[in-house]
Image 1 (cartoon, rainbow over the protein chains, first blue to last red):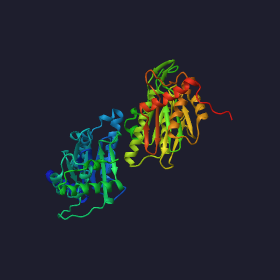
Image 2: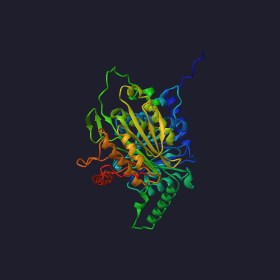
Image 3: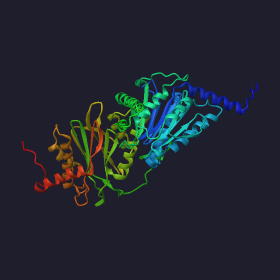
Amino acid sequence: MSTPFYVSPQQAMADRAEYARKGIARGRSLVVLQYADGIVFVGENPSRALHKFSEIYDRIGFAAAGKYNEYENLRIGGVRYADLRGYTYDRDDVTARGLANVYAQTLGTIFSSVGEKPYEVELVVAEVGETPEQDQIYRLPHDGSIVDEHGSVAVGGNAEQISGYLDQRHRDGMTLAEALRLAVQSLSRDTNGSEREIPAERLEVAVLDRTRPQKRKFKRIGGRQLARLLEAGGAETASEAEADTDSDTDSGGDVE
Amino acid sequence: MDFLSEHQPELLPGKRSLPPVKGVIEAPHGTTIVAVTFPGGVVLAGDRRATMGNVIAQRDIEKVFPADEYSAVGIAGTAGLAVEMVKLFQLELEHFEKVEGAQLSLEGKANRLSTMIRSNLGMAMQGLAVVPLFAGFDVDREKGRIFSYDVTGGRSEEQGYAATGSGSVFARGAMKKLFRDDLSEAEATTLVVQALYDAADDDSATGGPDVARRIYPIVTVITEDGFRRLTEDEASDIARSVLERRLEQPDGPRASLL
């Protein structure tokens, strides 16, 4: 039998991380933003069938960038975890923190086990609270660490550049239309700095809306409603540029 | 449910071993549930009484639950088991919707409930039966539909109106005389309250509207806008107007002879 080449553990881990990072960066970016009434998920997704965003539980949403089959696997695992927990105990006992921990364990185990290839995924788990201060957003990179995020987060593609752009422009208490507009602007910036237009049909948008009367706060936004919101957001930014003091920003938050 | 039975089977009803018992176990029983379809939707309602033998176990029990956005279950039979069954049923519909990204068809939901009732057959033989009534708005066919069950899980679709529970015989009689094809939503909600009143009139285990304690039947409406439970005020308005007429005519509205 031949002896295998010696590879230092540091090198092996660095290689795996590099492999996962490259896989995630190949996909398209998506962003998750807080706004006045909740949390909005925006991403470019040409597919109508394969979703990047999903409902996990009443107040918890899930977003993922990377390989579809891998994050779909994690998503279903998350739904199972949440439903089982809610059935065994109570609906209030399912929290984003608990779910993020389970994901971190899973990703961490897969990342460091030699037999398996690391998952090429980066996840966002978000929970909408009663007030914006209680909102929680967790980012879970491929290696199983957890990053507690506030305001805005971007994953996949050229995420670093986009989150830089968002950090400068995102502020608390934006309306849905404003947040959506900012998200689309950030997504349409290419790596080389040039801008391109993303048509509304290629956008996947979902919200966790704390004002929804139902227990389940997750809602997808598409079609006419999305077009209307994009238009409203555009008008608002235009009027802000003209230093218009009177703003009808409330109308933008209407998602029913 | 499949996942649950593999990983934590002890959480499932029907998988528990039964203690050997003699005679009937005393446990609270829910009583009468009624449902009526109208053009554009379906109404499902239930009285508020639970009995244990000859004792009223609870005056304000809730026996009608939303199963998901477009369907609801009303339960008659052993209250504890029935509530657990509904909880599991709700969980399953929601779980399917989240995993698959699409809702089950109304037929699919009705079949699933049928399987769950069948798995309870062992308990039913010992006197702990659960017999629900399932009503929902069929989004594909755009109409309200009602499914009734027996203890063995046998499922049958009902046309127009249906009732289950101990007072169902009387409620069904009342609905038979009052039902029309062209009921409005308001008329349909009144009809179910009339039927429940008649059930309470003749069946000791069914509770009538309790004006002193302000306990009124639970009335729910399912249309293409989804599930809606009438508020306490709306339900009390209907119950009071029915009660008022009954003060003059204790037997309720009369159908024509021919």
